[in-house]
Amino acid sequence: MSKSKARKLRDKLVREGKRNPELSRSSFAMLDLNTRKTKTKQEKLNQVKHKKQSFGKDDFQTKDFFYLPNLIAV
Image (cartoon, rainbow, N blue to C red; front, side, top):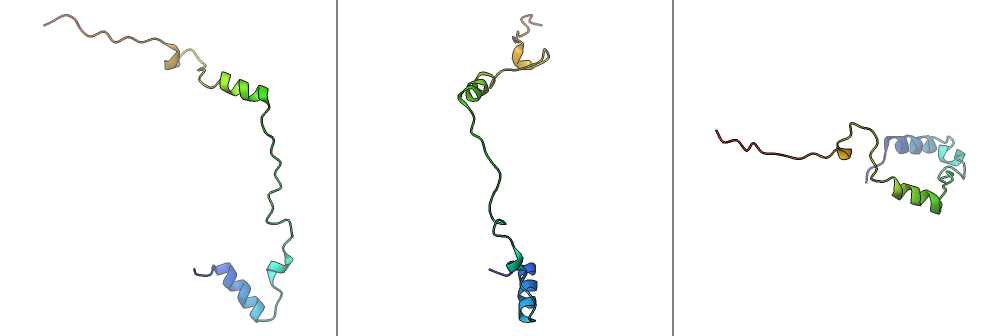
């Protein structure tokens, strides 16, 4: 694999005797600190309950349509 442009620049700075920017990184830089919450039983039940519901009067799923072919022969 080839080196990225940023890594080449870091390597060049190290060769020239300057500080490596990787040493300045925090130990928490690679951690995912987002907290996640699993759904409760009630939230799961509500999700299933409302999964296939359609809202609105103009929604096609709420109306019944019947196709009636033209029975009059010309």
